[in-house]
Length: 357
Ligand code: NAD
Ligand code: TYD
Image (cartoon, rainbow, N blue to C red; front, top):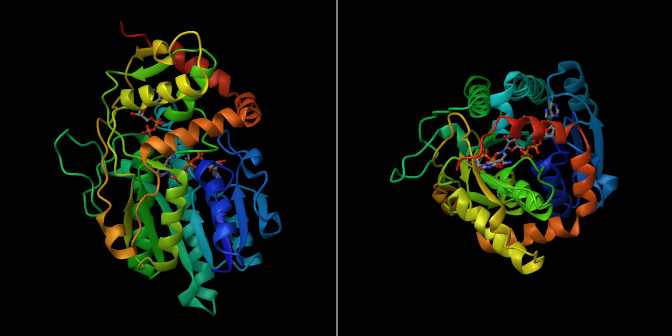
């Protein structure tokens, strides 16, 4: 791995991965392409450990001329593909960019990778790594076994359907053309630099502003949560030691309900930043997300056994570190919240959500 192209490196996980890789691999050069949609920000890339080895170029992964030029110009040998539209609620409100970026964008990148790999003198050193999600597997019943790498795909939102399509394309390039690919399917991430539309930062920031804490439906939906640094660690390991053509599930090995997560955050805030009333008094049950997946749960035995990876953070200490990070980085929060019509999106969303008494 010498010249690593990261797509979506100005977003939440991509920017954390760039920080991680600059430390873990002292000789790599990183080329970061990102369209800077509402979810991407250069503020996520401030204070990198070694900025001389990071080049940011604004551009769209659906633009084949742009992508081909970058791959050739920087002699890219490794692609780590994070760029995506990533928020389920937005995919319900407007699926078009999800189809475009997640499916057409992945296809465009695969094509550029295939061309570059074909011309490469070191074919064995080339890699296309695709970042995917547990949501492609669909929704589990309370007692169903956890998702493994061979669980059939059953996506149920425009977001998960578009990610499933992109996973299929990546596998097709491996089976049909031999492109050296690996795929990771990961559970819900949380940690520093997460855009505040997602549950954990949204709850932290609403609580600090004394706003209501919206819990969809009965709040008993289950997710598996992984601290973002543990995700970066797993991706790095798959890049170094993963088998070509293989998929690895990644997860935090926990299965809290949403209301449990919200209560955990409230308890941490009560301790670190006490207010006149307990933060849990701000909890409000609101109308449910259409087609809301009830439960995701990951079986991570394969990556544990084959690559000796397991998450280092428990949910309790990961959540505490995350709350502390948001408390310490209020300038970042204010900047992100003022950008890209975020407030308009939230207001519109809340107009459509009824409070459940
Ligand atoms: P994010 O929304 O925070 O960041 C996505 C980044 O992609 C943004 O910087 C955005 O500007 C960029 N982008 C979007 N469209 C683009 C385009 N057409 N061209 C170039 N750049 C574009 O997302 P995230 O949470 O960091 O997720 C990263 C990846 O990880 C996604 O593929 C997502 O499906 C996957 N994933 C996320 C989670 C999670 O909990 N966040 C869990 C599992 C998998
Ligand atoms: P989210 O962070 O949007 O991730 P995903 O939909 O990809 O799992 O949501 C996590 C869970 O929290 C999901 O079950 C929906 C729920 N949720 C709420 O209850 N309230 C909220 O305001 C948000 C954003 C999510």
